[in-house]
Image 1 (cartoon, one colour):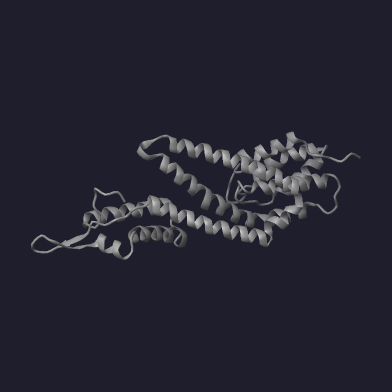
Image 2: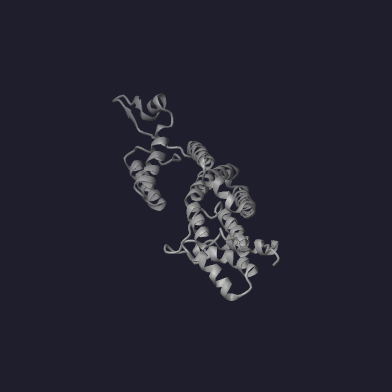
Length: 278
């Protein structure tokens, strides 16, 4: 019997199904399970002739699945290669093997993806876009939309086909000591980027000052703070927001409302100047 080989057409369709539908029918119970099923369907249909064989193969992918979807495309590519091996009678590849690999990669890939994209790439692109948006220019948002979609599309496609090419060998690359070192490096870089963005685009100052009976100013709080720690109010606000969202699990919307309330009270008591930008 001739060896079964997935066609470029089936692989491209599988990738597109994951690219557009990884959050298909998303719920807390299933997360990305149905998106995974959609991605594997064209592959299973090409590899197996009978409906019974196809159904049995698809049952493998009904297990819970959730990871960072962009970088996670490498897992879909890996299982495409494993499914091809199983269809060719490889006894070392069965449903348990495939699901064990999927479950083992979900966490590490989520860690790498969140650090690389959410913690590093998005802040960098947003920082550039904000700079290009000065004066209300539309160049900024256009740059972000084009750059994000271009990077993500090409990156996801590369990872999908690289995963298919590596198959089960990818586990050593993605879960070993090298992956841990990469993940830690990305987290460090992401932290530096977020700190740089905060220092560049967030500015909090106070207008609080004291005058004597002669009307002469003898205390300017902002000048005193700048002489000790320039930007300390900005740092305090950023750390406060991080503490609310990371430690107290406060949503970003509630955090913004808290900042509005603090600014409102600060203006009323004279701590902030309503004419300044915070």
